Length: 267
Length: 248
Image (tube, rainbow over all chains, first blue to last red; front, side):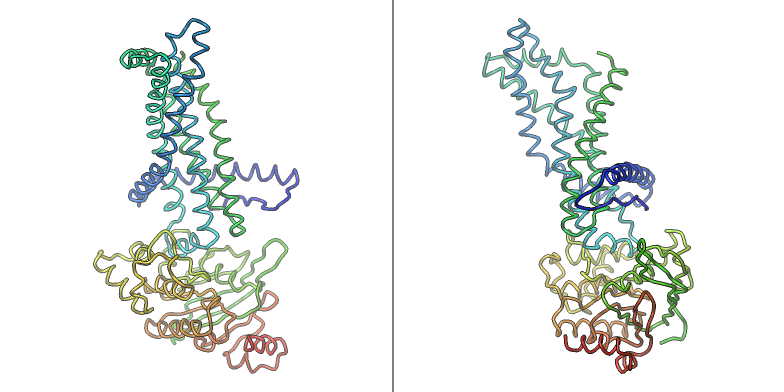
């Protein structure tokens, strides 16, 4: 597979930066095309996909658990005085649940996932590249792209929606804890208020977009690692640039996907 | 050694930008032959190997392995050819997330149809050949440099390749380990009747292995002959190279 090479120097000129930008966009497009071409061709590497899903899920589980709970807690703590000021405290459980489901949980989970997983994939594949392990697969008639990249991208695409649903659940619990402490709110009242405010059109697009975010995390980490060069410095660069690039693309896609989801499921 | 060429290179050229690495190189390697490739650092020895195995695309020229031009065939065809070859990388390139058993099994089971029992037997037999059966459940990080090379060699021969490429197989090893690895390569080559192309700076290694040697200089094959002929040459450049090599 021929992806355009990235200019790897300490100081880049403006034209080299522009070239690198377009080389990255082209490289990611070629990666995407190859993934779609190879994903459904045997061997499907199901065992490897399961292994990555398990590893990536387990790796990210503790940090998203804590974050999920705190998002809900802090959101309600911050919003409560505002809702009271406007005389709308009855709407607080529903409004906070809507914020969590529609935007906060998907985007924050995706950004944490990018930080944890994209850098990990970048470092792992980068290290394999500079120590010739990827070449060793290639010369042994094993398809390294299929084995290393396609499996990881499928795993990240599948696991992020699961993590997001879990984060939504924890964040709503966090919101309840905040209201329990401040108002001693009854859990049945809270549950009914939350369920009453949420609709099908709130949950589906927010979960659907996490498949895209998971795909972005996988493909950016894999791309940066797969093309790494320059020894250990190259591995470090692959790891850090993977996080920055994945986070940026996630935020850009989020803007577009929110607009699309509002057109399909208007409020 | 049979008189049939298994690797044939015709007018091979490769450059990186303005830097010409290989310029119009032609070379034949006979079945069962051990060819040693000498040359100073940066003269294109590893590039030559990587072009032969299809890791690098040459700018021009043809490379035939078992009569098939690896520069012209499809990727699928290239992989079929690669099933008959192996490559031992300078740093062994063991998969560091896999144990020794998994490293060997990974190459074996993906290239040869074997039952799990047959695979296990083959892995143990191959590890016995390199005298490292006890390392079967170790991770690469637990192995010394010499052990890594041995396991790399075991992984390279487990599929019974017809041609094997060695990129500096003894670099970084002490003289005793270097001699042991070289003798192991020679013994395995004799036992399994493989053809070998070995890139090395190491005269001890070459002395044990080489049937024939070439010397790359100025992007071309500057000298060719038996190792003895090269060492005893009147050429000042060769004399300087080999005398320095003997001292170190």
